[in-house]
Amino acid sequence: MARTKDASKAQKEPGRLKQMWQVFQMTRRYDSTAQWLMLLAFLGPIIVGLALALLLSEGNGFTIALWIVAGVLAGLLLALVVLGRRAERAAYSQIDGQPGAVGAVLRSGLRGSWVGNEMPVAVNGKTQDAVYRAVGKGGVALISEGPVSRTQRMLDDEQRKVARVLPNVPITLISVGHDEGSIELYRLAATLRKTKKALTKPEVLAVSNRLNSLQTALPIPKGIDPMKARPQRGKMR
Image (tube, rainbow, N blue to C red; front, side):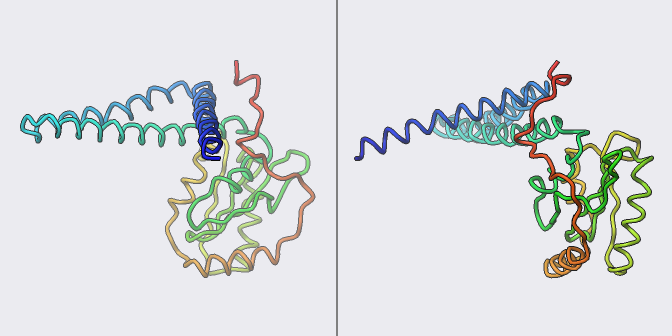
């Protein structure tokens, strides 16, 4: 039985390494700078550890070895952090510009106190432009998906609706796209986290429930899962 368990563990480990290698290959394909940033993140702590070892160890070989090992471990950790962030950015680049991309970020990319819905609160059936909503400690965020020239009016309409129901809650308008004044899709989660805190955790829940109770369902497809999205051939080239 013990041998069987050891064999099963040995089989799982290569799978994890292979998965990490696949993530690295996908990231490098869409982000040519990722491998160099990872290399810098790995070598930086090693160089710092070596410098500290030479300055503080007073010639003690064991202490020097400890500093170098610590630098290597820190470098591996930083390289994995860089890989995770660049992989997320590469994944979102695959669905950038597609209907439902903002919904995918709100569903799987939010952290902290922010709560978002993959279903938009307003949508233009002809152009597929949409407005999404998220609620967090920064208040209510209305996020448009599509050209600013077409979505600005939709944003203003939704802002008036929210302000009518919650007059004392801050409302932030965000446009996702490539127009002037818009933000890139991968920056959406970070932009929400940077908003000034105005609500407590219980207030966030109360505001979210209040808005959800007033929202009517829209017969439109759900957002795209960025981790399952198929690469676009044009960007592969």
